[in-house]
Image (cartoon, rainbow, N blue to C red; front, side, top):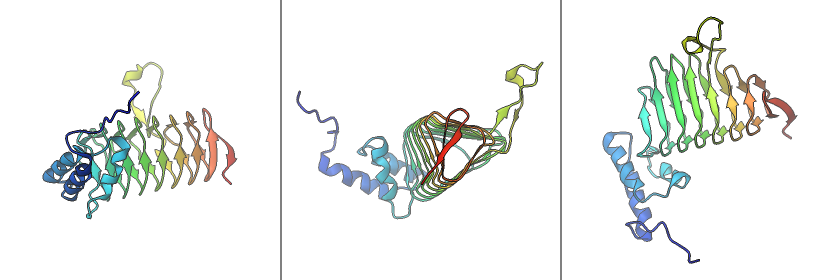
Length: 233
């Protein structure tokens, strides 16, 4: 079978990089700067291959995909952030801020949402991979520097009351104080982190685990609920 080049596009290969580098140098968070990012995206490689675009602008403006949906009036962006395709950042009624540190990467199809005074705070060089959902209501989700959150993870800083005699859809939400993840922790694919969880610095959470309580620094935890199986050496 012959090799098929599916990346020829309108521009010859030798011009593609010149094109997106030129427009990313003009980029910013202003309307015209976002237009420059859109023009850069025409020749940019797809998905995670676009991360280098976040480092081109000397002022550190970073890169926001033209398909990302940002609907948040208290969004604080650091330098060299990468915000990927079809990502949603949403502020609902009473929602607190979302703050991204420097060099934060948010990949395709993620949702970050705040409501009822909840906040989402991400430290420098944190990364959240494809299809992950972070929803902060009542209490914050605090994610330290260098934290890696793999694809399909879910973090909720609140829960529902379950009093008998009231339909579940009418139950108020409540919180135990939110979620905190220490620096350089790693969450494997499909991890669920529930309200009140505290994951220590350098901890590793195995794929598919459900974290409900405290995981110590540098521990390796797996299962539902997640339990420590050993310490990193």
